[in-house]
Amino acid sequence: MNRFENITKPLRWLMALLLVAVVAGCGGGDGIPVLGTTTPGAGPGAGAGGHGPTPVDLLSVVTGNFVILSSSPTTGITDTGSHSSAITGNIGLSPATAAAIGVYCSEMKTGNIYGVDAAYVGSGTTTCFKGTAPDKTLVDNAVGDMLTAYNAAAGKTLPDHTELGAGDISGMTLAPGLYKWSNSVLINSNVTLSGGANDVWIFQIAGNLTTAAKGSVPAGIKVVLGGAAQASNVFWQVGGGTGATLGTYSTFNGNILSAKQVVMQTGAVLHGKAMAQTAVTLDANPVGP
Image 1 (tube, one colour):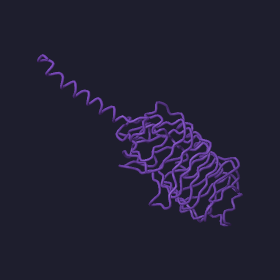
Image 2 (cartoon, helix red, strand yellow):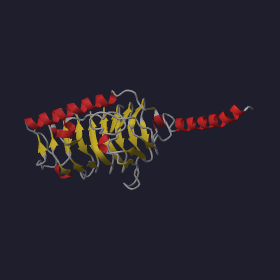
Image 3 (cartoon, rainbow, N blue to C red):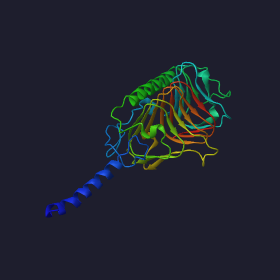
């Protein structure tokens, strides 16, 4: 071995080790955590210095302060339990008649229930209900913007991660980015979304989204916000034939945009918005920011 080789051989080994470390940190579809892999973001809502894709613009869903929306022509928004949900923000249904809204005014911590007509019954108390012509326009616009937002989320291209974990993201820590699956996504243990206040996560799920059920809120499966991450910057686009199911006593963060229903099982907590193109079903759930 000559003198030149004595000098360069250690350098080649060092460069090889550095390359392995970089590749290992990139995550991807192999099911390993992907904390630390970020893509510079852009657009209003991402904020200066944010990472991840351009956020989904929810338009009048946000300005109208809606946290639950259904665009079903027949089914609606119901509470199948003891009518003890606690909703912070407005809820709305269009184009189905307001008679299909089974949430009571006593469940509205703040906000109102919006419908397309005056047919809301509830528990007999209708003080929280709005169903005049201007109210119909408000909820119609919100539902239209919800559908626009769903299509915008589904249409995002150039994902940072494809088929991560083969759809099972249980236990992972996920950095800001665009994630895409051709099938369903399952969460059986806590998932952490770790990032800054201006970072964005978009999850494109062609199938269904399901979080596992547990026996209490403390023991429940959680989608956790790490660092300064904000639920308002997290978007779950769900295209499956069932939709999104938040298991019993789970805690979920983000805005759900479902092509079908959103089902919240007993005691599940949602920090964000439930937006469904069919039914939204509640069972004693806190919903809101």
